[in-house]
Image (cartoon, rainbow, N blue to C red):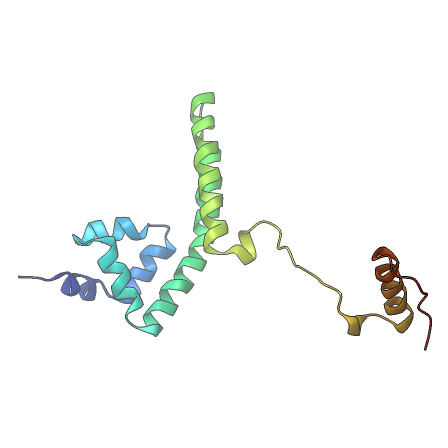
Length: 144
């Protein structure tokens, strides 16, 4: 009698990563092994090296999703198939952006804040004067 762990161990991390890189979903892999997705997820997370390899495989899968999106669009033969292909391509691009946001994600937003060390003394004094004036306090701030 085979257990879920035996089924996953028989697959092995190399084959799991190959299947993920080819664009197969974790759910599909779990179903093919006759196990639940939670069981597969726990097996992946149980070893840091295994978890890291699967994470890298998911990142590499982004390119596969990109290629799948292009293939769907190229093979559409009529307006109905094209509409369906556009929806699938959009989904594949979304999957690619989640798998590898650095390469396939939307623009990266950086929250840049100016700190006092980035300002000159004159800029600091000007900001301080604006704050004092805005708060209703009297007095001007000038260079010390």
